[in-house]
Length: 195
Length: 94
Image 1: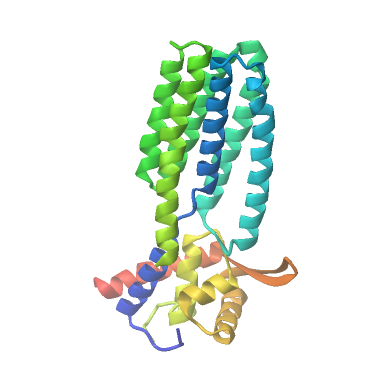
Image 2 (image 1 turned 180 degrees about the vertical axis):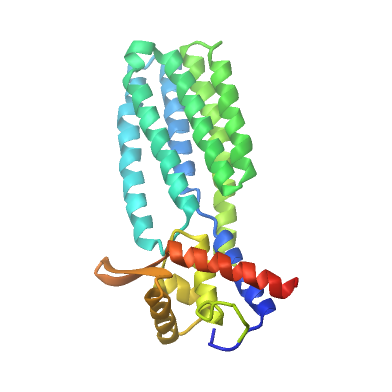
């Protein structure tokens, strides 16, 4: 781009093309959604299998895999920060939305001994749905918006289920709310990068 | 030169930079260079002009031991851009 006299029509073209370039940048590559989707999905199924085969250690999958997930997410976040060359307002809003989700999730989990497993799973699925719906709205990505509805539905269904069935319910909610939309988001992100 | 149009914004590269910065929170020099396809030298000169007019803020720092130049539009810059677009509309639809 050089310095030259421009007319008003050219000015409009410049403004439009530049705003379009910034607008079309998809802010999320879907990695964390896919990663946490699979991690919690697998943890829930391992826990369920342990209950099914009367293995007592099943519950310990959570305090082992979840902190591990936290470490991987932290490392990933740091590496992304290094790569980041532009920060959009959507990036900021997404950050706040997921931070709110993480805080609310921790509070819910801390009080699990008080409220019990059933209510905890109910709130976790509501929180998954809420964070995914906000992300889907911000990214204007329909699979996330639709996926969030599965998590809300899972929360309602969980009220009528018993402990081991709750694990299957949360796994199903994550499959439709995180895993499938996450992979679709990643596909779109990659196609945008390869353009 | 078109009458009433802010001469600082009525330039191909400066207008492109401001239009990009209007849409994002902040952007690195390398991102602006890539999107505008300008040369580093020309972009530096134009960014300096926008900074002197208080249209943008330039923050120089280090990221992983490499120099980083971060640009952000100011309130003055945003107001000037809005005014520019308003006047531009009169030229297109008098």
